[in-house]
Image 1 (cartoon, helix red, strand yellow):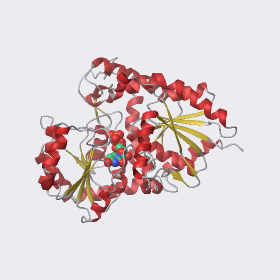
Image 2 (image 1 turned 60 degrees about the vertical axis):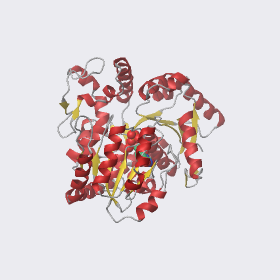
Image 3 (image 1 turned 30 degrees about the horizontal axis):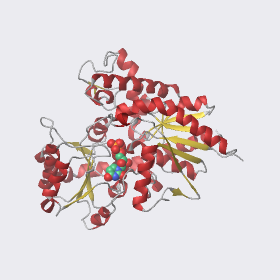
Image 4 (image 1 turned 135 degrees about the vertical axis):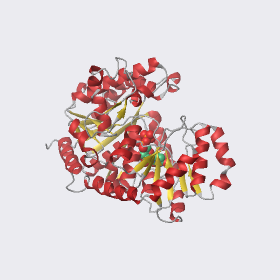
Length: 466
Ligand code: UDP
């Protein structure tokens, strides 16, 4: 008898790989075979991180496992050095052929486990064209961010029509818009494509790439989304093609084991350190996988944490921060780290579920946002890119489970950091609302929760029983 076989394709970034990996493991648990395709360099990085942990088989679930494979992205060396958005555009030009070849090879090797479904990240809509060309009838996009962010992409034609952006995606003025009442307000100068580069040509190319991608998002009946009605009901009403199946991180199995997808080895010593701290005392400071700080900002953050007088656990990816930052932290190590701990990559979900965590100073990536939410942790928001401003609006204005950090002349000062830490910890209201939000968010993925029902229907559709 033949078995459903899904090819899962994430975008090459940590925040995209993690939730699609969580979804893949859910599918495997339901007897579906999953082949998870990264580009070569990402695959190597994940394998290296796994080896460093000495847990090559960590991705195993039940009697089966997600198969990790890779395809070349064929970027020339000079293209590797390009900015991330430029790389995304180049990859979309060279990878479809490689994907076609991979599907052909898999299908030739197997009679009863041919690829029957493709699930591609929402930013790589070209994979759907490949699926169609190869005669694969089930193909769907996976959106690892909020439904509101998806709604923004789907609204591009309207934004153009209403003159909010021009033909190159540039906002005609800096203004706050709302796609629908009760949806989070968005600032036009924060639209993703305006932030990718200072180079107007690169911005325009990226906008055109997004427009092409949005057509793929529109072409499908639905796009599965790692969010829930409980978290964003107005956005799902506005964009009915978004099918909520999340938050996937809220499912018990994913909380226990964040499975084979980490780009860097997690430093678990911080969990022992957390064990030694009083309940609800520690500030967890982490900015996702891509954030870099200039030296002045790094100094202010370090000194703000010191000024707060609270224990803290801080993730600093020293590999992408400059030597000057490293030297500075080294220089004040004795003083600063009597009360704090620095790691280069943390087991974030385990950290956030630790009883010692008092609040999450976060860049508000969607994964970090929902990981904080499902653990009932209040936030301090420090967004710097993409959908993070939108997520900050959810946190501060809609869910009211955190506070923004204000920038003065572009810098968040040490006094501002210390003062907001104090405010968020003293006001019990933040913790209370965060606990209520946690209950709501987790309800959706429980047995008869709305996201869980959608996920089960989706699984039946993949298996061809629906
Ligand atoms: N993460 C982690 N360890 C860290 C920091 C982050 O495992 O020290 C994970 C985090 O749990 C999340 C992902 O990396 O799943 C980051 O995704 P997010 O959308 O928050 O931010 P991005 O990296 O895309 O900016």
